[in-house]
Image (cartoon, rainbow, N blue to C red; front, side):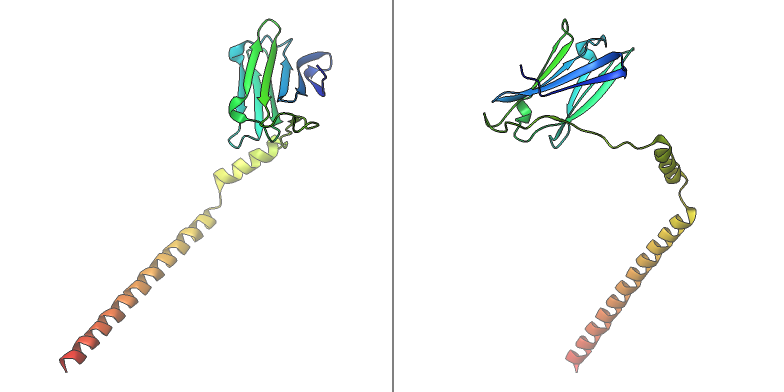
Length: 176
């Protein structure tokens, strides 16, 4: 098997936790995870594909370790035929993603998806601002809503009055 990519996820430089390999044949993309030191079982591993089918996330969690990795699914993969197999003895997870057209897409590899890093302090500040809010802004919003609703009511009344006057004028002209 010719490996195109090999990456280690580590807790320290000396202890690889999870290594993954990507490869492809004429008919499928193959993503292999070697989970040698995690002590993971099948029930500890979760595989999810996002709604639009553009990303696959593989995660594992047990009392001692955890990992989380997201990959971009190449175009042309038949999403409903993706298969995963976990070999407990070898501590290996293999995900097979069939191509919609055999022999096509040579040279395309499965790429890791890098999630943007948001510092905890910044996200905490945003949460704090949302919780506290600005009472003046809320008051202005409700006042604006009241003015708009009042204006709409006033315009409706004016239209009804003009309609009533118009119908009175028409009926008085008919009687003359």
